[in-house]
Image (cartoon, rainbow, N blue to C red; front, side, top):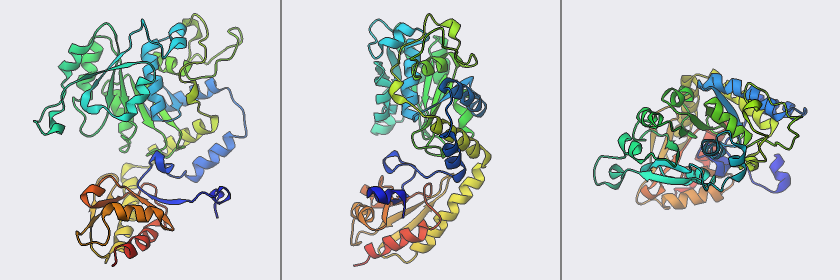
Length: 395
């Protein structure tokens, strides 16, 4: 029995990975305990974020950082910081960006639905480049000089989505943006592991970078990190905090918020709906330290053990071929034969509707492949998954 039974909600076997749709993963007991303890106290949220900033700065190599309510919230806050700077009047007007520098340049092949967070601020996306390598028309994509040529009087930022195939290289993008005094905001939500990526994007010139806290880091599902230049992080935090306080009374921590640089206290900003609680901040910080403490090799070895057990348990499954991929997060691919009693999509749906409910990665079902990730598997899940799969592949 679980707490979810009281509310008539099924628990599932998450074999897809830390997807928000599937509630992410589950928390390490140390993280859960830290959050429970944090919930028994009250603190000043600005002071808490200043404490978090020190931990995040050390982990990322950035000047400062804050805990956000997810990576998308970090992108919204980061973009708002680039547009409004430290001007409380501009902060109060967003998403009305009339008269402000509101253009955000990004490579066309990096567009995705998550850039809605950027557009929420009132920013106007300006696309550059033609992704011939994706269209099958050639090998080229956008190049740094195209970004440089698009920078103008209305440019507020360059937005870069990090990934294994992202082009042009971030270092080149940073160089051309900084030559014109334009900051670069990086979406690195899913770019962990390796743990070295925590520092990679700042080292390559990013002015702000957003990470998901509820995926690889193992923090609360509704958490994220925004790290970067101190002034930009200051602006992002000012547009996020509850600032219902008299100016004379307000005494924010100077290590993160320099009150004397402001003409007045900003009103509640565009990031106010992205509230993050004290429990989430503490949970993220404890999880971040645990993530850094575990080596990439140990983490990969732990995942490999789960996949090997799943492979052994699935041996002998009818009408299917098993393939295990390598990498930091090894995965198991179930390739269905043409004569299988179900298509990959049908098998995926049957698993989800079964008891237990098993949710694999459906991203390749159109190719007859179901993928199983170890990210969110519990110790007894490999055998339970195999027991659910095998009967569905028999006539």
